Image 1: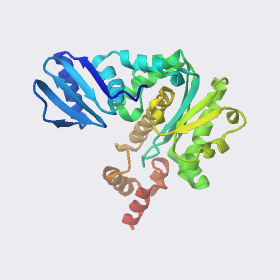
Image 2: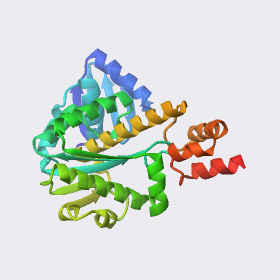
Image 3: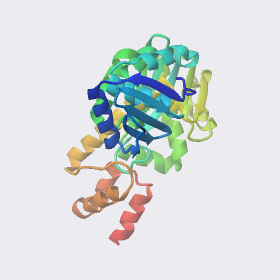
Image 4: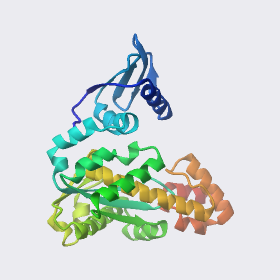
Length: 309
């Protein structure tokens, strides 16, 4: 993707202008005093957008490419001319490779899900056309499920998924004793599983979360033959973005199943609402239930136990 692009201009209909403004309001954009002849001006995440009464939209800033690719085109324009052109111009993204990402590592409740996806010159542009992007940019669970279904259809078996339910996660963590080592183990397993589906995959890309030697050491014989790359903001790559979507879908499904089983709506993250729900669970269902619904090395669990004493 062309991350060097710092400006973009297009024309919106009145309906599209209103829809974009509503979306920005819902997602916490900062609205500023608009210039003459403009309907509104808003800023968020390194990009400023001005929408004029004539229909002209001007986006400026280092976050322009992400805004166009992940918001404007998939949700407002419903076309992907810029995104596809950018992907076609990115030789590295089009080259055969896999991407791996996880979901749930920062959530007290729910599983840890790790996914890997293989792309090539044929599938990478098609995933971009679907609107595949970093799952953190997708605020709707329904949209995550839609994208995940599309990804599986496009890559046709070229993916792998590992879901560690809390019971398994807690057992592994107690044995491994370190989150980065646990993540490395999970990444290594999905890489090995993906290579069973696509043995010709030459390299794997993941977000940088620790020393890359952690993953290399956790790989088995097949995985040690490929090139392993880690970099910050790897989710800008379509294979990693697709993996993040599949991992997020698996995490959300796991959360839904646990909420149904416990008859309590389990919140995400590890903030005040999570602690409040934890207190309610502890009072009504006892401490034993946390082994199968929560990650017990979190400070949240220590705090809940201290409060209960």
